[in-house]
Image (cartoon, rainbow, N blue to C red):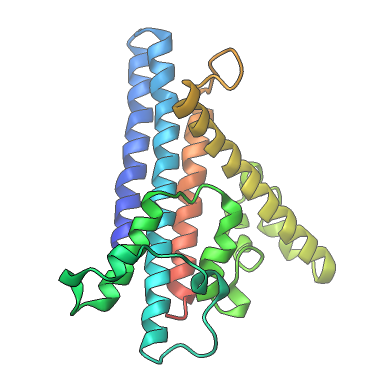
Length: 239
């Protein structure tokens, strides 16, 4: 059964794809160029929002699961450092209306933290998720072969056949290249959303342009990343 945050992502990324499709209808109908191009940029921004919302909700779920396991004596060893250092608002933890649901207080406290933060700095992902993944399934190197299997060099640089032909140090370096390529590609899409929201799509002076195909590829990249990441997390998380 998909989690609520996976279902929300599916809905949100479909909204982004629908917005992009509408921009094509507008273009074909001869509507003003600036208008359909703005709708196109908006579709990419919405896709990045879907990515952020998914990662934020997934982190809250993982943090809560680890703390629940620890308090119930089901966690072996020390808490992962990122989780043990996570600051939570005392107001939510101490809320009297949730005295009989202490772990729900933790979840709500974690949600309050993420309401003021975001997950669009991809360098955060190791700290946020590796604590709940076993040693042979960590981000990024254990995960990136799944992304490379899509054979999209623009996203991953190396494809599945490249990795299959390597071993040892050469394979290790290639996996690092894939991880770097994914972070760079998604990071550039996140920057598009930042520019769209904070300066109306003007990273410098002119409004940036995306073709329909470029926008479609960037939304596709986000869909692929989240679907593969969610499947990886669901299959391997220890609690």
